[in-house]
Length: 298
Image 1 (cartoon, rainbow, N blue to C red):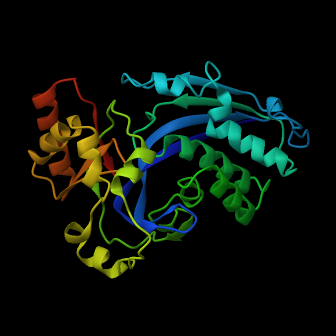
Image 2: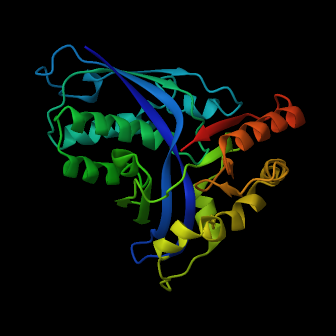
């Protein structure tokens, strides 16, 4: 039996890094939204009662379909590099260590989302498979959530995969599926600059003094005024070429331009679909094929 899963990315419609916690993680708050740009995962299961004993019982095969020049970063965590660093592999490892009965399966990953782009591609791969396992009643949701937290701070979001308020170190999720009363029409640049999240946090230099979380009504009623990404304080210095992309997007007169995650992707938002398409056509004329822009509607 074959199952096809669409492993989408995410964007941060809002992101603050509040302070450094006692456990050395950073307290964040953010609005995550699913991004309709996908990797494709195909799972083949012959017998749901034939259980895996070791990770090798669930072989992972990948096809690299990333078009920009940092596609080599994905090769490093594929079966052609060090597969143990792949988050799908790490997920399977944790499931088996916890003696969770999962069927033997073959996993085929077609990779389209560039690594280091700030849209959570690897986290989505692991989260999407976890979500599949809950849908098949192989694992319950609360257990899946605890496992997701162990893999990475973005992974829990992909179990919910709806617009959500995310806080703590990223593991606390409050779904807000009907929070915004309008759609987001946007353009995103998935570029070839990879940003180190660890270095970005270090450069922010947050201390242990606690800062309050935002009142969500402010974002709901005055989104353009309050939406920020605090990583922009340092990331544009870390990679000055991102300023060029931001300036290109600003030339289209958007409502907002934001970095997503710690970068490197940047997106712009517009009032309606017509304005989004007009802006996309303008960007193509300005830059030809040298920078990849994609439209999206959330």
